[in-house]
Length: 256
Ligand SMILES: Nc1ncnc2c1ncn2[C@@H]1O[C@H](COP(=O)(O)OP(=O)(O)OP(=O)(O)O)[C@@H](O)[C@H]1O
Ligand SMILES: Nc1ccn([C@H]2C[C@H](O)[C@@H](COP(=O)(O)O)O2)c(=O)n1
Image (cartoon, rainbow, N blue to C red):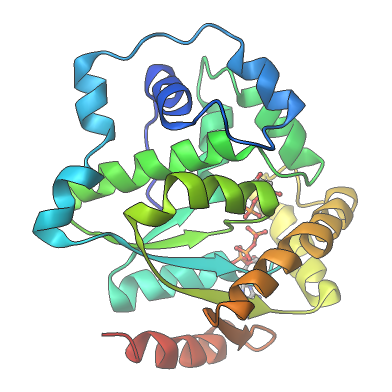
């Protein structure tokens, strides 16, 4: 697994959620409104500095570059991202991996909520996902200087899109959106096979049906939104991993 997983402490995540999300944002889910009522510790000065490096880095290195990677569950997003990392030097941030890590982190207040959403194929409130992504980006930039990111599996619905747009869009350069197209049948077969060894609680027939419904009902509209902005690079993901990567390479090769 090549994705960079941010070691996000509760206080850092809380700090992000409390201070980086405006109370005026519309569409905050009822579920999340409950979380926000729990006591959030005030940030220490060091957290304030360590979580907001983008502003100080703009003048030196420009905005971080972001490619969103979308497609149905099992279309091969993670597989292709690993290859892109090796060949083109991006950092791979999987929203699903970050959420699973936060779910597994001892003491996480969000663990149960994340697991409930994952198992039922629903999308976790953006406040959590975007805070995890922003932390991971900050940590990567600080640790490696690499400011090119593949953000895999995000934005997945209107809530994700709105949250990202209001908090992050101005801080990054959106390069394009990679869209892996693949049939439900083929993707389901791949995920069921992966489920034999992945240990994922959602690689089973029941969860997959729900994940596909979410993809069709919520994510397709997000891909259409980016198509209207002419940002989508569509790839037939039904071929072998190497054949798919041949197409992917032509797209990244065209970038400056
Ligand atoms: N082109 C391909 N042909 C056949 N199998 C593939 C292909 N690409 C990936 N796979 C396999 O399919 C499974 C799903 O791939 P992968 O995890 O890359 O998909 P994903 O889109 O990231 O899935 P998810 O969104 O569910 O995390 C894995 O077991 C992977 O090895
Ligand atoms: N933006 C996201 C991405 C993922 N999740 C949750 C719900 C997904 O079914 C699950 C697994 O994601 P995957 O690894 O298949 O990309 O993670 C989410 O809520 N929001």
